[in-house]
Image 1 (cartoon, rainbow, N blue to C red):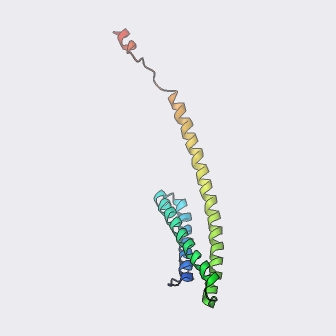
Image 2: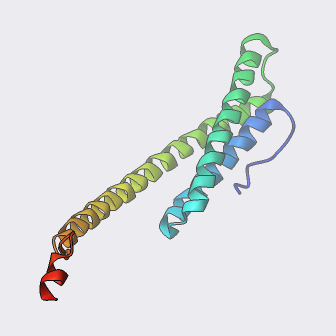
Image 3: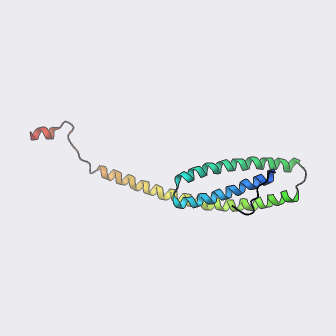
Amino acid sequence: MNENCIITNDIFSKSWSRTCELRELIVTLKQSLKGSKPAILIAGGKKLQSLQSEIELLDIEIDKRLKSGPPLLEQERQILVSKKELQQEILQLNRTLLTEVKNIKSTLAGEMASLKRGRTALKGYGHKSSASGKVINKSL
């Protein structure tokens, strides 16, 4: 986990903390792509959506606080600046993850098309027998 990710109870720190978790999850998902671990990817995708929703709700609260609350404390201002930098890093990680996922998807689509062509070709080698058993009856 990022050494700058400190967990505290205020809304700014919670948002920062969850954003740190999101970054770490994306890194884990990116590493899992190389190992082709579908269960980890599925669970990670669900966790990713959950974290994003939680961060969105926290950010709505921060927005309300910025619009109607007292002026920001210096610590809150620093958290927001750091969070913006972290979001830029997450954006870049998402871009590279998306590229890797698209490459895997393309590879799998090609492999599936190849398997389908092979299966179709194998059907041509099938044994055709008479449905009424004429071949057996004629030989007796």
